[in-house]
Amino acid sequence: MRFLIVTLISLFSISCSEKESHDASQHDSMPMVLESDAPGAGDYSIYQVESNWHNQNATALNLSALVGRIQVVAMTYTSCEMSCPRIVAAMKEIEKKANGQIGFVLVSIDPERDDVSTLAAYATKMNLAKSNWNLLTGSSDDVLEIAALLGVRYQKMPDGEFAHSNIITVLNEEGVIVHQQNGIAVDLTQQTSDIVQKLLETTAR
Image (cartoon, rainbow, N blue to C red; front, side, top):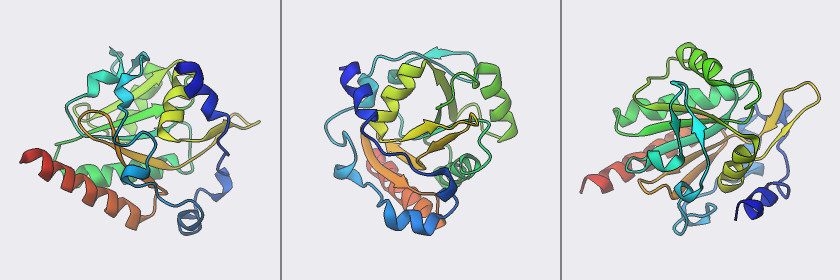
């Protein structure tokens, strides 16, 4: 299973880091994946993956520890100065409107540099509340596996930085993908926030 998932990542094309700041053109060329069109949506929980992670608090966990709460997930890295801070900013906008009812996960695509202490410093720098946010680092194989499941494409560049997709994923309480935002434009973030609110209303019934 893991071999198949990791192999799939090699089939993805890589988004160009030089285009990451152009949300409008990215929106046109890379349509947002919605609900049943999202990879694994409706039939596969990413919490079934047997991978091991550490968060910014040095707590060991696997993804199944996130069950029972809607989660908003993105793959970034802490030394990114281009799109990653904007991804985090978009997620914080979603957080404001969710009133602490959902969780947020950042999975590092740069585990060689993003150890626990680096993630902790980044969480402080970005003002990410410990109660709501998990910043995860794991093995390269585990990063590849979760990237394949989330449809995130990334590639290490000669200068040590990464070209990567700007995808924000919403998981339901069971870890199934119900929505993906491809791009970090304000209107896309608002749409994601609206979808999260609908999920919360459904859950409360």
